[in-house]
Image (cartoon, one colour):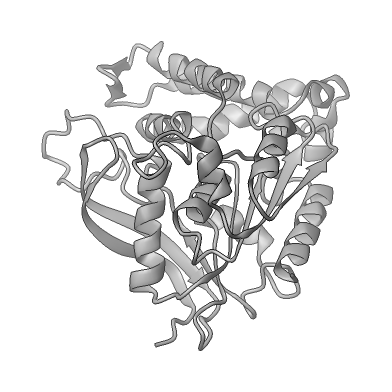
Length: 344
């Protein structure tokens, strides 16, 4: 049976999901969209897992006729990560609104996300093999996990501005973000019941500093993004973040902070063995000034993954350089890399 283009958001009912943490995500739902059509051999599917604060529509600038990600050629599936407000999240509990919600949202791992995505892709959508799994930032972390967990069914993997596990330095950044939320008086008992506006504004300003590079601010490159001043950029980040649900942000932070492709029963923490198990043709893209996922970490990964190439984008735009649709020159770099990988 061939799957066809499904406009609009779909919900895959996962049921009660037992998580790596030992907790249960009750009545879990995975929100997703598809573009294009699954071919007769059921092997032209591409999965684009979402990233931190991102939702499926954020990837749409990468998709179009004549692009590497062309829905006329591929069946493109974009699953929303747990915690992002569309799939099961603290802001969208399964229980009715008048039910007691004092129990914190369970801790969901990258592997928990990928296992449910695989159920959606292989069981529900009847895909036989993936032509590609690809993602930016936390989406890339899920791409690594896909390649490790399903080596026989993932033909290609491209992760950009990402890593196979969260480094100690990256974890310190995440602890800073969590501290911003927890410092707000509306944050109590590790959750909030009304928006912690002060915490969210602080969160956004900290995030903006790490998202770009020293040279970006020194040379006033925010002007290329349409901001008249550094303060204008910071205020825009604030406005973006005060609209987000703080409990969702915290849930996804916990997923990010504990990301590690080897942190499971199969590999028991053996990171090198996990990476060596990948059979997909792999292309890693890094930005020279990325403070979250610096190229040195990807260099080490590329030495272990059997069929892997690393390409480094020289750019002062830091982690945000390859944010979908943000920097035109970086998007050309990404498109060329995707074309090269899909053409093999």
